[in-house]
Image 1 (tube, rainbow, N blue to C red):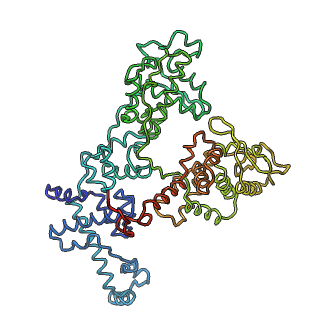
Image 2 (spheres, rainbow, N blue to C red):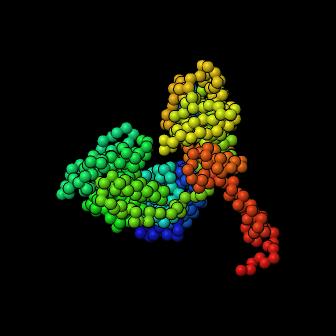
Image 3 (cartoon, rainbow, N blue to C red):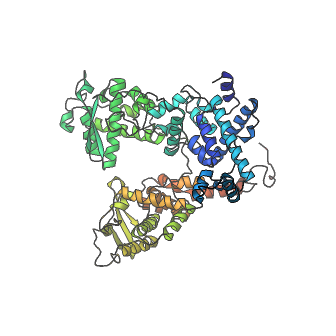
Length: 622
């Protein structure tokens, strides 16, 4: 391509012009909407971005066509509507359709003109469309660039996405290509980009660079360095002897085997998990964090647990904050398989905080059982990481009243079915009780009982702790209707067994369901409800993220909004710390706004300075 054309397409703040831009314009010319075509060819997410990007490409190519002397430059981007009825049939088809073989040419032409008189406007539209497409083909041949990995991202992506990527240090296409090649949840370090947007980014990059692939960094965990043994839902990672070549098998004190039976770092991890993990989820979390540290010590520091010092703790915290690419698994890799690494993606602040808390507890336990000499380096490290600056305190993960009503309207509009009745029960019961998803799927009817004339429920909850919760009238009504739909009769009936599940399968009203079935059921109903609602785009996006745990957040938010005392909500939820319950206190936030508006707000709530009523005495003074 001429250098003058290349310079013109890369200047002026407009994205560089590639083959995909012309595919977009041809699709629009053929009748595809601007939004749909931009989503397909330009990697655009939102409608307003699609219109802006389309306008930029049209203006840029019109300018180029004018400089090259094309009089038809106005046709670029012009919507030329043609109808299928505009086109007249082929003369041979007309003869065959009317069975006119043997007629003279003059007679056939006369009949043809009578049946299909020429439409001058339609002919003109067809000619304009042909000129438009011909001009696009010509400009594509002289102006379309072939993207290169070394090109800047802001030349090929829309400004909003390019700005987000540049803030994370991704300036070139190859930078993004290498990040995607890492696999796993590679997008976690990118602000305002989730799994769906990440997939669109990857698809758009593949459109730009179809014949080029970045080489993923080598994985230090392949080739027999470690092996895996799958145990239930968790994964036990056992370091092979090659991992410890040149070092003693046990760095603990000689008598450690008497207390724990463990003589290696890998064995002490299993002993700790067996002794301290109260559930399979906790065991999985403990084992994961301990073996991540073990692998880091082995590969990066050539140390073991007993040799770890304060500087190593600090270095590991810095390592967790900025994970190297080779420590992140490729997408869809199996544990210890090709492309596997200990991390699925960059860690959030909360995940890093949880890791160092778990490790501090682990080292304290190793000191207590005598595996380590009485020194816990984590006790000398400031493990407080503060809050995640990217986490919104207004994001409660609770259904808004509008989304909740949309969900209920969708359910009531559906014909009666076992699935609908079960979902109605789930919504009403958990909104009124605040049960965790695990508590709901594990509950039985025998856990409900009367206490002084009211119904309560004993729950075996988080941390294997028992608690008793209130079962309000809304929950009881929902349960009665659900039991009737299951054909089990009233709760106090003689035919109801205490062992029957609170939440049952559709095929068997006496068999429990698992969390995955609950999750899939809720996601399906939420998608249907949101698709048919009149919620705004941002509200839809938030509601579509909902999971069963959102029902618990909805209970906490609604209870505090309706003036339930904080200590009552705290006890119902089973929170040990009232600060955890305060996360749901949006009503208190609104009261805070109202009270301070009365104290300091001369303007109406939400008004900008200078827009509302005039400020009172003293306004503007320091």
